[in-house]
Length: 308
Image (tube, rainbow, N blue to C red):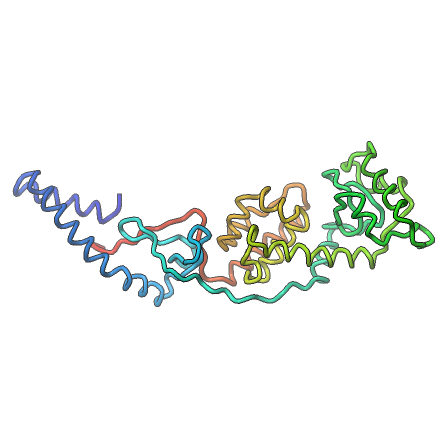
């Protein structure tokens, strides 16, 4: 029960002692109606006052296409009027693009502390995905065929059929990825040189960024704080864009709402190192400091306009 409702009940009880319950209820309903009409006229002024004071601001809400909702600063709580209706405006917040990602710095992040080791030969990762280079997932033999593999020891280019055979040998091997990448070295005699692995990782990053921007996933990606872009890109590089969106729905919802604090909490991946998880967590916490207003996924707050 709101403070307003409690106070109206107190008024009704006092009136009942003077003129009876029926008359008290009638007077209460009449009074409530007058107050609600007065409140409706003041709501635009209330919203403007909250924005001017810095206590609230406008934020885009994926559930309100084409418009924005009024939110409390700091918590992101979507503000409601005394009737429980969301404060809205018809035009969305226009977030300008933020700075881009330094691809080489991000690749360096992938390589430190064992995040994504450079492995020159084809192997299976812990999830049994066929992989090579700096965590490059090979979905099929054609993807292996298109990479510039060379013969181990001589660095001579190899024929496409040689690459396909190497891919199939690893994919069809009974060795599980959990055994570790070193177990796969004897299976093949071709390698991807480090410079080529870095070049492939860089191209993959551009592909991930383009896909992240798609309206199906994170259409406002270009305007996210740079730290949030880094965290989201780490998720995509590890899980794939589709895997991130479908495998981590609470994280995805938080990102779409720009609730970076919640995104930080939901970004943890148990199969990864604590160091990598902590880095991504801190990136989202940095993003939280860079943005004043966002629409919370879970919090709403009703404004009390009368009687304190």
